[in-house]
Length: 126
Image (cartoon, rainbow, N blue to C red; front, side, top):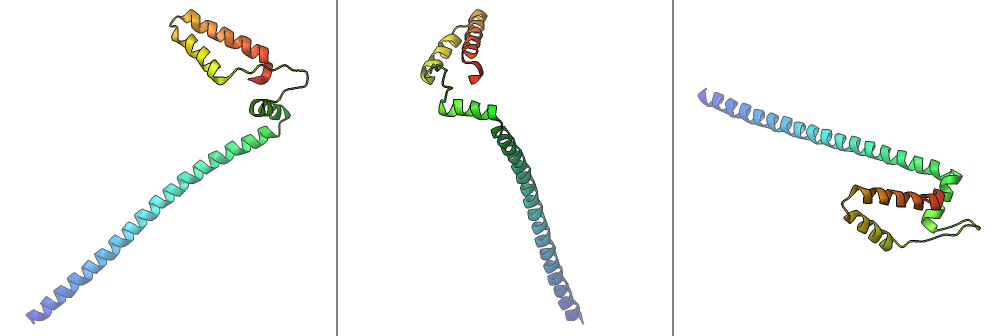
């Protein structure tokens, strides 16, 4: 009779271990599914933001003024009666760097005045 209770105890321990293993596996699987769900939800939000940006760009591209601005910026196009002055980027960076090295507030205001004159000269180009 004692040996029957020992066998029953061993069987109960084995069944308990199998049950614990099964529930741990289910818990791990549920945790993984939840992490995957959160990652997918985050990706959906990112894609929705990107989609909104692309829709805005599409709306802008349908605007004639925006198309003209892009053509001027990207392809350096001009109207037939316009004269265009192209300042190389290296020269522009050098000028800005020289102006920025000065520490006085007067120099900074001169830069903004100078930039304002360039923007006025080129009109809607910038």
